[in-house]
Image: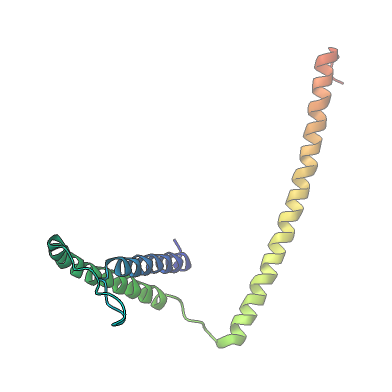
Length: 140
């Protein structure tokens, strides 16, 4: 897999981790009284105290996974090749690659046309052969 695909995959991983982390934090957040005008939120049941200990560890683990993914992304970015010669050199290289691409495209088009002509010839010979077989004619 090339470096750009790896970067895209890492961005997707980070997005997934962030989505799950924020969703988990939102889901597991304890109720909070927003204003004195609202009633007191319900108290947690006794079994919730045990769950609270495990829930307190979950954000730390998810945060660590996010940090690890971000560091991996930074490593991939650092592995990218440096642009040489500035913008002018890059534009020149792009023009060269485009010219090369056009030349290869023209060659492929010529080969495609030759292949289509050959296909037509083979189809005509096949048609003649089947006509001869059906009509029980001897080939010319």
